[in-house]
Length: 224
Ligand code: DX5
Ligand code: ZN
Image (cartoon, rainbow, N blue to C red):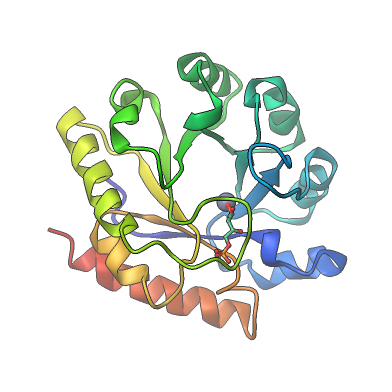
């Protein structure tokens, strides 16, 4: 199991007119989280393949592409060609999860599956051994800056227990309303990849990343 935490700033909260320098300002992070929204799976639109290509050129950090889209199979190759390192699709949008995961792996990328707050961890039972990362959404996806759903902490604990029962240790990522106030508790429950948008892209981004990282490490050190 990963002993440390990975911090993944969500550039949904960045200043898009200054994206190059915004990426430089988060260079102390571990991943860049790239939120793709289609206006159908979630009630919002964000950015897509042409922007991902530009981001790939502007950072050396791995790109964590979170596809909040219907029919993720239809655009998978385009996102991989554009530079995705982690490809995360939503369980709720993917009736053929095994096929998707296999394809992501055949293309040399890491496969992740996201669960909305209303989706029970049991849907992981038959795919958990194939996943590199599980994304537990801690808000209903669609917007940055929403309030963290407190019951997510127990859900992360359940997901970690499910992985333990299967004898596997994929990364467990959380996304939505994450910051210094909850990083320790969510990591103590078992998360080890923290997406953070609005709590990073304000004031001094490097300081924010460091503060979240310190809280997260405290939580990890308290893990049972
Ligand atoms: C929400 C997105 C998140 C979002 C997080 O639908 O998946 O990645 O940008 O933003 P904050 O950290 O502000 O909740
Ligand atoms: Zn996201």
